[in-house]
Image 1 (cartoon, one colour):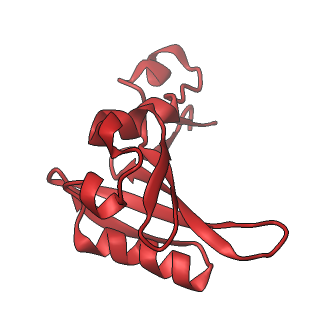
Image 2 (image 1 turned 135 degrees about the vertical axis):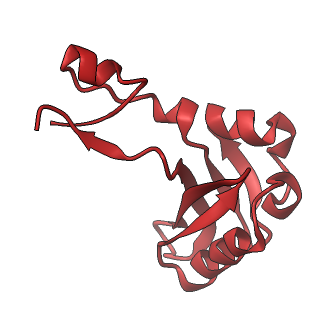
Length: 127
């Protein structure tokens, strides 16, 4: 069984427990080459604040290293998903980004992104 260890509750009960990603993994949607943040899930809002919506990612997502924004730039420019490890608040996080593509014109108009803590790894239960 695959699951996520949530305070070892899964190991105690033998059930698969998967924390709500909206609470534990910041994710958002940006548009344009300036990466204006259009949407952030609850974890994004908790990490970067509600004022981040409507602002360029570089101005609102404080604490992320320049490599994170270079990744968003590359996804927007190349139209291909990319991922890399970044450092945020003295922890390692996996940043994954995907192009947002207009279905009619096939033009990239933005980027969707997701951050996952390095400690947030799947565990095998009952093995």
